[in-house]
Image (cartoon, rainbow, N blue to C red):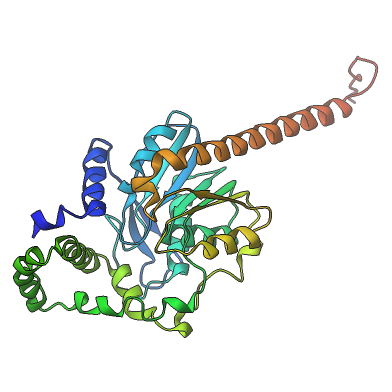
Length: 330
């Protein structure tokens, strides 16, 4: 089965990214007192690279922090890049609870506070973009970058993944049937399709968030925490990046974000697929770098104005004439 799975471009690329990042120490921080019923205390796993203004990266569905390595290693010379495994993903805690976006937001908030991050820019892809946007609605940010973000209600998604439900069955018969299907897949030249099914089964069984979203987010009435009606409250400068050939997140979802977030920018990556961090790092990097530069410049300008104002106020409070007033004592 492993040989067959290696045919899948995305699975192969994710394996390469995990191997590339092994030299960067994995860190874990204990988060206590979280506002998450059932997960008031849990571990957050992350890797960081570089120094400077902190940039926090949130991965997509069925992914981990490792996906961001191609972008982190290029930005690390100017910024403190931190890639986090979201709650229920990767090496972070996987508590037994009903996962929703609010829980992920509070997990990220606890992580930000635990590391004492300030002047934070948040970058999220797909599911991570959804979490990032919800975070920006509730908490202040210096900047927000959304790559093909999920989180916009779309009833056309209903039933889209029903055929994947058998992949969640815990019975060994599913694995035996998949094993038996390998010769047939080779005969009918469907190895790539079977490799994708095998990868999905492994990923869905390992990640409780993925299982729950598949099982409990398939009806229109289940869209209780989409953010299309709240994103107008985001005050941070925002860059929305869409993939021209995205077969997961429709373009109009990205356009909705760009239209409803005040003064948000929308950029479209030509000939790009949904897996932007893994396959299109070189194309998206200039857009992110330009955005981060504008944020850094804005922060520097604001700090300079504050210093000048403070100095002027201090000078205006001193007595005129250049000499200190005499002090008298009884």
